[in-house]
Length: 243
Image 1 (tube, helix red, strand yellow):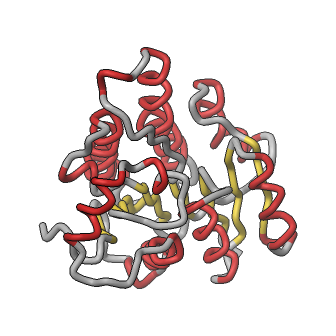
Image 2: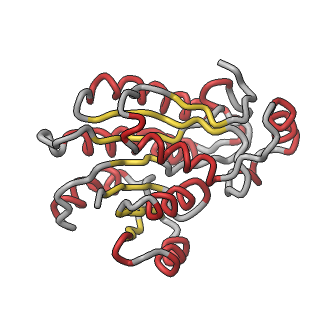
Image 3: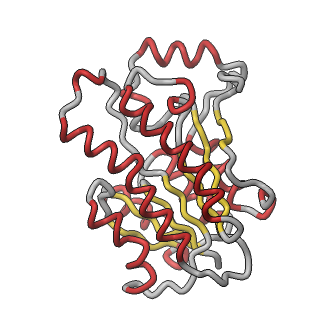
């Protein structure tokens, strides 16, 4: 049973991806600072396919040691995939950010990905087949955001994805999903109403994007069907932003 690490696993896209991975036959190592959300996953998913780890990825000691601890403390011998999903969004002007909030967003949305990804890639140099990293970025990283700090970190995730695809090849494939307006997430309700309306106006496919729709693309990127893809950013946006 292939093992997948998912950060920000307790809610939204992370939760939907955890469920989809379990249904696809993976063993999921789910990490989140939301301990209640992790307990809910434990209640509803098979114990032999799930383990949970409370983890706050704004903390340097957490993201610096997390992957190493999975191998050395929790005795996992092989990890097939890493889904970097944990993220913050405040939905406010750059003028309103405190220094603490800036540092926290930088840590969760980008810096933690740097450490988790490199630590994952360094392990298992003789794995029999390529392993996979999937980063969850955002359309905000491609077309901008009224929340400039969020948009800047998500643009950084896109750059990191492309660079790491080169750095980690051929042992690790690195791709990203770039969602637009995803309903039923904690972020959705923080997006100002005028921005939600603008996202909806530009969608050419009208079925609302739900977390499960993004999870389906992540499952594809984990699978052998995407074995020729690395360094790619897959938009999940109902066609709103043709590139």
